[in-house]
Length: 97
Image (cartoon, rainbow, N blue to C red):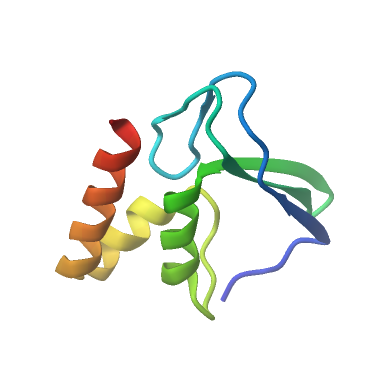
């Protein structure tokens, strides 16, 4: 089970500079709309940036149990679900193109 942040906000800004996606590790290109989640957890501020497709899959995988941001790749590998792994690989190819 996952602990929840003290507070967080979710926004969908357009990138004015390149960022790295916290989930797939690939570049979020200038001009791309991305997901930005910022808040406070256990006394420390945090900010995660992700491609929208990566975040959508993150939400699907997290479901009710919750996983930590930045752990999607590991979670998918640990589950051993071939369909989920294929979807993840497809998303990574799409955001890289």
